[in-house]
Image (tube, rainbow, N blue to C red; front, side):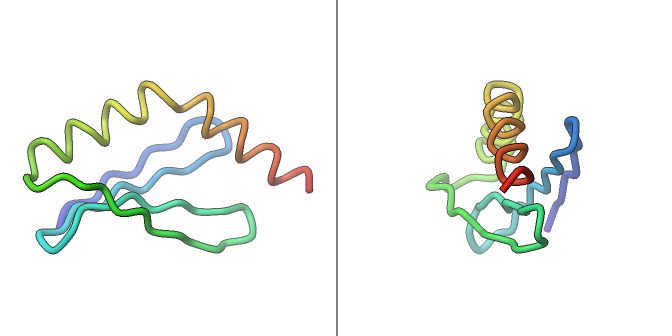
Length: 71
C-alpha cells in the first residue's frame, strides 16, 4: 500500500493505492470519509492519474470543501 498526503488550503487529500483496487479518499469537514473507486488496473497509471487529478481539480475541490464548511 502506498499513501500520498497533500494539503491545499483547508483541504486535505489522501491518495491511497492498494493492489486490490485503486480509489481516492474524500475527507469531509465533519470527519466523514468516502472512498471513490478509480477504474484503473495498474499502479503507475493510478499514481499518474492521482497526481494529475490534484493538479487539474484542486480549485474545484477547494471550493466544494469551503461550501461544505459554510453549511
